[in-house]
Length: 618
Image 1 (tube, rainbow, N blue to C red):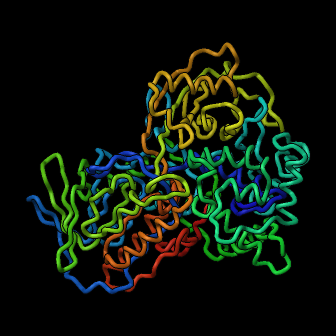
Image 2 (cartoon, rainbow, N blue to C red; image 1 turned 90 degrees about the vertical axis):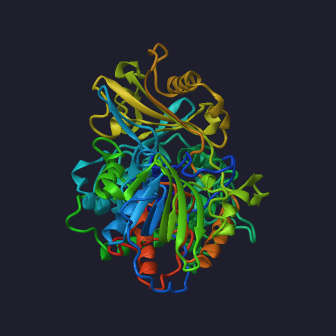
Image 3 (spheres, rainbow, N blue to C red; image 1 turned 90 degrees about the horizontal axis):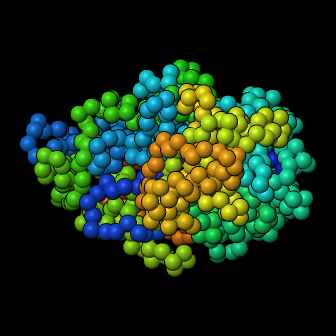
């Protein structure tokens, strides 16, 4: 139950873990984490935690009507209606939507390119990514691709390919359909050769006691949530589905998505949509013990109705909700297109140093730039830079913003929002060097890598968190006699990865590939790319919702200023794109003098800027 990644809908199943996992691994490759520094700061970036609030709160006070500020023509000062700080996926898509809505916008980015951690490469016949590898296809992605004229470059994975879990020296497929649509796809998911029933009765990932325990939690019930206590992911999963499900399924999922520790990550903050299924379950009068299958079924019915009432636009390309997707030449196609569209509205290598506010409500933002000190005057200001880059910059206008860095969190022994190191290592091996074994459920030989990738539970002794089978996902990623693998290693339970040399990191990745995928005599890897992100994915740990709540309260008292980022809107690529639509509408309403609605945390189910489509990952 809660969500099967391949499906167009949320598909409740016999054991909640099955669907959670099938979605989870795919999401792990879509994370648009945002390390690096957008802002000159005296702070070090060793801080803590996070939540999934997709949109921002704004003041309910009407802004008094200004005459529009206009860009100056030269000099050291510009004047605009909206300044966006941070040109990652959240900031660049926000600037795109503001520009389309007629807002005079400037986008300032500290690096020399847009996209943040989304950076694609194409060299010597290999296409690879330094950060996220793909996205879980959602309407927001297809919509923006259509608006930018790049929808003809979209590519989607084979919907029948499953994610795999490494356990006891074997690869175990997670349930998936065979690419059928509508009712046919539902039947395939349950009764197909790699369906739920086959997983339950023939699969070897879970023992029979583990399957029975999960089935009880899914169909009969479980202990209620503790009163007055915020549960970690481990506590929630163990309570509802059992310890074995956690260790073999959810633990590797959390490693793949957040590179995090499920014993410190908050269930309601990090996996809010899954946690919400329990609320649906208890809302059913006769379901006294909260069996989550029925909550998932109830949400499934609602979601199906919502999508039927709000279908995709007819000019969009056909897509399946949640199916892994990318662009023919990599994810950078999107920010590159935005860069071309915005043109001289972009300021690259601009590092913000100071923010203050005039008595008339206009913000003055100072930057260090290649051409010296520059200042932008703006009616509204949106910062999408990572939390660790904000120290002291916004405190003159919003003192409470320091909560992102300074809040002491005794529950997890951290201060502020924590970003652990993660390294993305792309390697290639000849197909003949992979194990010559037949995989279960008719998927064929491992040498062809028939799947999305493999996850490694921490109990298996493999240091690599997960390996994406890039050459199997999308066409043209490598020469035909090679397999291309993108490996993620590090995270909050392996921070020592940041202290290793490139050679040592490659050796660890190669060791993991040999443990799971390769023959003993496989040649040394062809190293295609290696990128260490010292501050990678924000951790949505215990107490994160309190931090976001304090930030939202502060924004109510600071009209025209929003401090956002993937520590609020969600870490996945589609979350960041959806934020761009939603928050553009919030800013536009503010500029128009309308009383904009206060956004609801942690997740907005319907994009504010595009109400014609329900954009909920499945």
